[in-house]
Every structure is written in C-alpha cells, then in structure tokens.
Length: 332
Image (tube, rainbow, N blue to C red; front, side):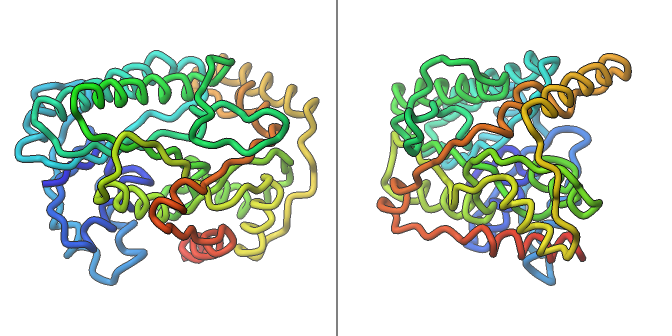
C-alpha cells in the first residue's frame, strides 16, 4: 500500500493520477473540508473516465497532527509520499506553518519508522537552498547557512531536518526540491493564479529569475526516485531558469491576451507590499504581497538539475510546452 499526503493539492493530485496509471494501490489522507472533487477534476484533464481512477483511491480523513488518525492511515503502508504542506508568505501564518510543515512532518517520519516503511519521498522546495555566490547555479550541495529566509522556507527546511533525522533511524528517504511548479487545476493559488491574473489583463511584470518545472515532471520524478535504489539523497527539480517576464509572456501568448508592459521596480515593489500590509491590518485577511515576495521579484537565482538528469536519465518537459498545455486546460 502507498500512502500519499497532500493528495488534494497541486502536486498530490497529479501524483495520485500517475501512481494509478501504474496500477498502484493508493491510500490518500485529506483534511476536513478538503475539496475531493478538485482531484477528480484534475484527473479529467488526462482521461475521459476520471471516476474509474478516482474510485480506486482509498480516502481517509486525517490531520497531520492527529496521531490516532495517522496511525490508521499507516496500516499496511510500505511507501509514503509526503507532499502535504501549508504555503504562505504572510508572517501571521508562521506558527501555523511550523505546526503543519515541521511538526506534521515529524509525525509522518515517526510513523514511517514505527511501521517499518520501506521508503519516504518528501516534497520540499528550492526555497530551502542557499543562493550560489557570483551568479553560479545552485546545486543540491548549497545547504542553507541560516541567512534570512521567509517563514515558509524556514519551516520547509525544518521539515527536511526531520526527514534526515529519520534517515539516521534506518528510514530510506529521498527529498525533491522543485522550483515554481506549473500545472493545471488550482487557479486561485500558486502559479495557477498567474494564469488567472494574466487572463484578466495583468499589467505588471518583474525581471527576477528562478527555476520553473511542470507538475507532471515533479510527480514522475518522485515516483522514479522512490522506485529506484537511491536513498539519502536530494534532487533539484527545475526544467528551466527563466525570468518572470518571460514566463508571463509565454502565458499571455498561450491565452491570446495582451502582455504585461509595466516593470515592477524596487520602488514600486516597496510601496506595494506596504499598501498590502495596511490592507491586511484593516481587513484581517492574509497579506497577498509581502516584503519577502517583493524582494524575490528582483532576485536572480539559477538552479542546476544535472543531478537527477544524470542519476535517472530524466528528461524535463520544456516550460513553453508546459505553459501551453496548462493554458489549454485553463481556457476550457
């Protein structure tokens, strides 16, 4: 039996479909009020019979910090894919992220050890990696030195340490560090929101550079690594390093809408995050544009994926193709 956490999220839902395609027996945990229908919708992007695949999943309601429920989820489980996480760049969510991302991962690791799970695959992020000096590409050896990071990055790094701790207790582990993940199904968060905003006529763009990857590539890499003999390793998952303007333009072309024309300078970004901070104070809603995210719009960080390419002869899909395929789904 394979256990998947975060199955109702972007990575988890696409991972579930890829596992089912391979005929795997899968159990997925979900939190109360999670939208299971969204998973079925994701399946419908790939097959005309999504119900057939969806009905093969054994769904179990369980919170990452509810040990009794998790113990039930681990019955007869041999492989675990841990993709559940709370993603936020609002400082008000930091404590919640620590509870979900670090403590939740601690619980998963402990139960993997207790139940003698054969292998754990953990989905981390390139946010946990240290920037390389002098514009060099970041590799898996660029271990975070403790320099200032977002609350999200801190909690994902803390979760990684729990996974490595499990490896010291004879648990086979592998970690993936994806870049910005592009894929269909979640249009109100992450990269999906880019499609939504650009379709509405987004006027602003940034020139910062980061790594991008397709969600299907992430899922396939996770499965390939978990099914291999590889253990105690981490892998950057980045197809291409592009600036935001390039990606915004690709999306605009794919959606047949106007491209962004106003560059976000550091001055504009500084005003923007401060205005959004005031808005969040007045409304009580989470900040959408923070000081950290404003800074990231201007950073230029390049990532190297040679390690997984060489280990598995892995081939990433080009981002232009990922963008086009995702745009076709969005238009539908």
